[in-house]
Amino acid sequence: MFEQPRTVLLAGAGGGIAKAIGAELARRSAGITLLTVSRGKGERVPGHTGKRHHLSASLDQADAIASIEHFLCECSTPPNWVINCCGLLHDKTHGPEKSLDQCDDNWLMQSIRINLLTHLHLAQALNRQLQRRQPLLWASLSARVGSIGDNRLGGWYSYRISKAGLNMLIRNLSIEWGRRLENSCVVAIHPGTTDTPLSKPFQTNLAPGKLYSAALSARRMVDVLEQLGPADSGQLLFWDGSQLPW
Ligand SMILES: NC(=O)c1ccc[n+]([C@@H]2O[C@H](COP(=O)([O-])OP(=O)(O)OC[C@H]3O[C@@H](n4cnc5c(N)ncnc54)[C@H](OP(=O)(O)O)[C@@H]3O)[C@@H](O)[C@H]2O)c1
Image 1 (cartoon, rainbow, N blue to C red):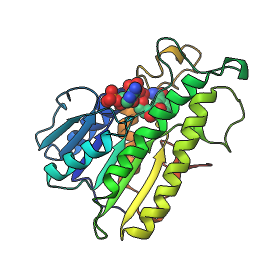
Image 2 (spheres, rainbow, N blue to C red):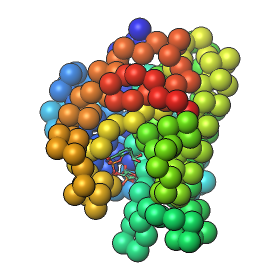
Image 3 (cartoon, rainbow, N blue to C red):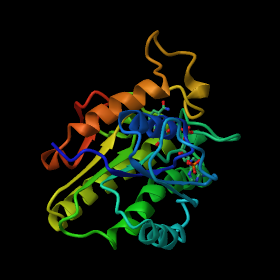
Image 4 (cartoon, protein in one colour):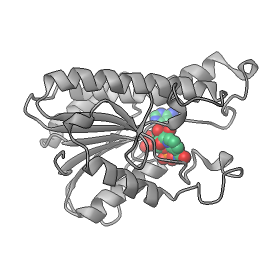
């Protein structure tokens, strides 16, 4: 089993699931140190009494790498857990494509920016500061629909493509950091369909009981992360801890 969270870097901290993860971590250990990164100012985490450092940054921009490096240096304690919650499924004018005809270059590139580059940039920022003996658990919130092996329905091109790219990033990262660090675990995890702004437009056709509150999803994912060890690195996980095909 990996070590329990002491200092957690939570990226995309303004999102629905991220806020619930922050609250869940504080519920388990009120004095935990939280390092948060989001485009916003950084809201108070309910129940949290420990140290808190916040960086306002847009992780899809390459200049965020230097800002995060500087932020991590100033925070003095390196994170032993990193959870990146950044992701995008729709905006005011775009949503998941039902067919090839609906694909649009700009939307695909924007999806890649938010679903993939936000995770790549955070990893690049952390990479330069990692010490061989420093334990590190990294979890990227991905999505089951980003699994190529599990795709039987098609559609949702931009989201699927960008999450599949994220999944490959995570697999690569698990290999590189697995070689470099004595004690690391790098995974992608699917939270389940969770009641947040991201899923709002797609909640009507869900089977009863298949939409989970952010608090429940956060609790289940933290339960899973707490059980992981280095041998679990390089997996795409379902919210119950079972393995999904890449
Ligand atoms: N909700 C679900 O049903 C569901 C299902 C499967 C997977 N997921 C995944 O779970 C993760 C969290 O989703 P959520 O449901 O909590 O959604 P959410 O409330 O919409 O949060 C989205 C997150 O992405 C970041 N983000 C969005 N647009 C961005 C942009 N233009 N530039 C930089 N960052 C941006 C936000 O960061 P800021 O803090 O900077 O605002 C926020 O943390 C995502 O990766 C999503 O794909 C969710």
